Image (cartoon, rainbow, N blue to C red; front, side, top):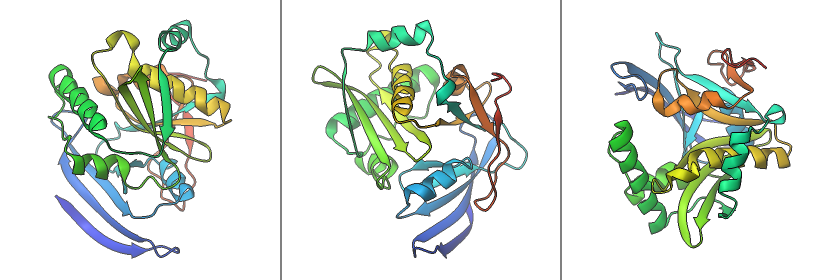
Length: 256
């Protein structure tokens, strides 16, 4: 249930709605979670990066982060792009997908998007017990198309004329924030989830960006386990407010 709703106006006269939400945990079965969120109608790139650096995530115009009083399982991670070394396995995945074509543009919504999104989520529902997909156009639009400003993009991957993966990212001044990725489950040999993230790292290196912001890692959560494989990485200490400087330290499982 939402609580503590307040409306504020920042220096640019942008309306913000802030609240907290209490509900069953998305990552640890049997736990409850408390989420702090802001609705920011016209967020700037600088403001977005200020929040991402402090452990917030973005879906549409909503920015959110966990504020669970008795649990710190959610760790915000970022990959150190300059020091990332592609393994032999990484290079095999890149070569395997070298025939794919890609398009980068601001987020859109088509029937191909919705069909692929639904197929991906139905696959995860059956294999990972995810909640049933919410692939209706309104939900997709508010989650992935709204709020992109001049920094939100989608990278579309095609096998010939067939859309097989969509990677949604925010390209910020210091790094790329991974928003969401979904792909065709009928292409398991291509390792599309891994491939899209490797492409993010490659793109960030070309742009001389420092970080890939991975969002949350929760030890023991199968759907998030892949994040610990990308090293070196750093994790955020605590939940700093916007007026406080964020402190990122070496992720303990993978020393620099």
